[in-house]
Image 1 (cartoon, rainbow over the protein chains, first blue to last red):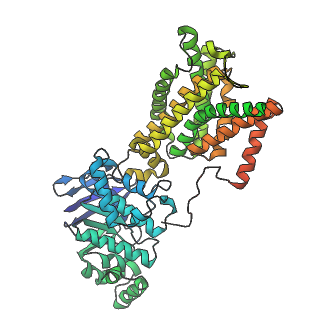
Image 2: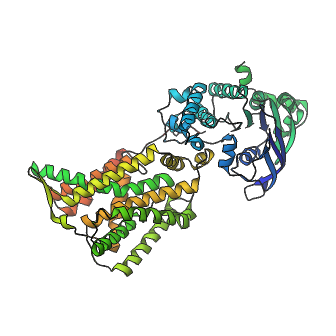
Image 3: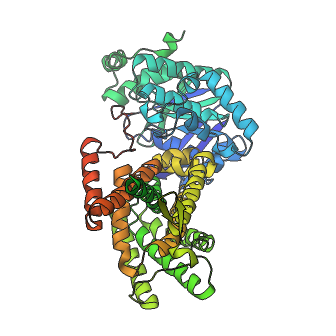
Length: 259
Length: 293
């Protein structure tokens, strides 16, 4: 269970997160949605230790994550795929994925067995093993970024805008992978601008605005909540709700696509 | 024919030494985007220390690298932690300013402590040669070349086969990506800078035998080394090796069939010609730029 309580955090120019309370039960997929500047990505950076909160706590079960180094949080089983390019462009795909096991590098047997597992889950890692990470397409890069995170057999996987810049086919592949991880019991916390896509993937939804959590519930409850329309389109009536749905329509719903 | 063969072999021998000297520069640029203009001053500093050790203890100058290499590793580490770390994340031009200041400081210290006179270590084999048929190979150049190749091979293995090397390369290519897999950015950068400085430990010791030097000689050396890594591809170790061999060959061939005075010009013409067709240098890699993710 991942729990944020009263988290306040920022980058020096004022707090981006202003008292965030969030709960992700084990084995769930929680999607955080909200307009630009809501603090969605900042939540992930706080959980992964890339940003230290000035107030509040982040707990994973009985382990306190807040205040620990990024490496310590990785060791605790929390890995993150960031929004922007995270691969090592001049390293081969295989080396990129191996780097995901940097913290277990001294246990060579474990490292190689993890690599084997990851290659089975994401065949691209073996298929394109010798290719430079920087020469992959956007979708392939995202798959390798996720594969790299799996080298530590994470309990919690943080995904920042997994759909960003991906074509529908790549999107479906990424969505399938997320569902497989969910089936394997990994707790997923993801941030998405694409509301319909994100909540379609998730079991639970969280709506953020202005650095605070505005709404939580099951993904379906959140998706159908009229406040979603008000947050994205500035209105609360049924017309704007329908408009919001129409705006999100062109993007396929991977949950449907994957059956 | 013998003359040509002699020139080519000597060019390759000296090119190998240049490669070692340039490797530290290209490594530090590749890892941290830092153009370490002080690398030439490091070489002269080490040459001066080597000369002093040889003069006062009689130790072989090339073997003295056993002392100067760890010394430069330590100095590089301390310099990174105290000075270079302050410009982390800044543009490469800032690193040029900072390391140029460092070079001037080293030059000043050497001027005061060692004097502004040419020096050269001349061990017993200084004027001896190996003879292979009609070809004469100066022992000092052969020993220097062998030492340089050994260190380059070790460096290559460290960077490609060890986790320290992978961490260094990962940090160089994507610092935030490296942090996400648990690589400590500052400690890795300090190691890389120290490793780069340590190559001047061997390079400077070899230099003390092969070339006369004085404190301001670092200007000549840094311009040569920068030329080599631009030709080879900034940040590429194989590129530094090839660029250095080209410089070595350009020097010996021009000196044999023309005049040594034209050697540098020939080298820079080669750089110009290569960059016209390969702006990234001989071994610089161009990656996809069409992916926005």
